[in-house]
Image: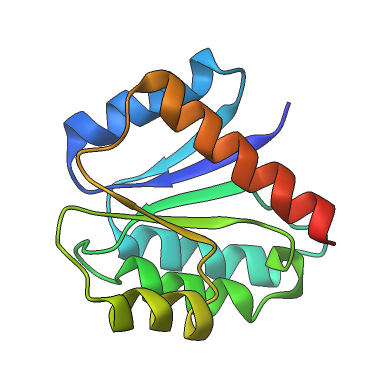
Length: 136
């Protein structure tokens, strides 16, 4: 069973995403802020055989580190080269901000909140994972 990482500071959204991903058959690792993901990355980088998630789903604006900062760091770790990174935001991003996050931070997709419904979200996330795997 493959693991999906979820980082979201709003407990209701984090718990809902956690539950949905488990219903879809994925194990989850959840973090309530960007700093905790950053600290986890320290351990991943030190590990001889690190376990990296199949998908990373993070809020952009979180306490500690922001989702795009974490994405940049993940892209510097070889083990994350095939891992799709999806960011979520409740804020309107300019086209320039979206483009920068995707080109400079290595983000694969940006979802706006409120998130799509259960089936749409499942379809979007699985398509992103499939596309990333087939591109490598």
